[in-house]
Length: 378
Image (cartoon, rainbow, N blue to C red; front, side, top):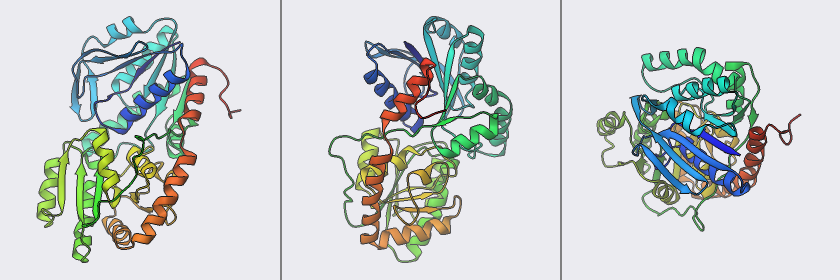
């Protein structure tokens, strides 16, 4: 079998979708020695061209425009790549319903009679950006995105809220499949000590809620709780966030590290007292899952599939999105009660190891690609 997957971006570009696609590809290839994978992805964070990761794993990067970060739009030549790499034995895969190239690929697959599997990572309409960006995104959801979901041979949702979102948007059912989480051998949470450190990892876009985190940190500081924040990531609102940190009197407490590679991000989370995710919307947040697998203390907003990883009050703290005061309260509790946060982090790590495995994901995705009965589905 030949799989042509079309994630919007791919490593070395950082991000949850990128990491998901890469790990899924690696696991699929390990499980099936007869499988070949061609990844057709944008040239974001890399140059256009062909890269062979192995004799059965090829990455082809198409030239793109980036009208809104991080949503690449293919330049002319995208259909030529489909004609070159999509053959009669091909199964196609798309990710997240609103990307323009995913719509082009879904139309191509339907016209050519090619089987296509879709993986939906989102669980709400687009929350980030200004009013115009959200209006465009909602229009895309109401027009282009629905056929992307409806014409797929099978749809995988990365979390229960993503499943409900697919049903509401397109009227069809998806199969909830949790991803696995593998970390480098021996890597575990080991906070570096004083001062207490809060770590955020993610793109610096408005929907990630870092502005709420800064407001919360200002309250934590005002309450007399020492804390240092390390912000790992870059994006269009970085300048605004740096200015906001200064205006809140947090210049000495908040450090913007810029874009970091995946190993560095994991090391930052492992060294943190608390890993925080203040996002306004998520599918199944990769950084929260990584922190959980590391055995870190997690404070996060209760969005998307986050509650499928963290149980509020048992294995971590969950707060409503866009409520900095609630976030500040949770951070104060986590930072000032070492025994409690350590006990919850240990249980979170144990639960994560039991619940999140690539084995089931590979089994379900392989069945959908082949058109055979999906295990556990009737």
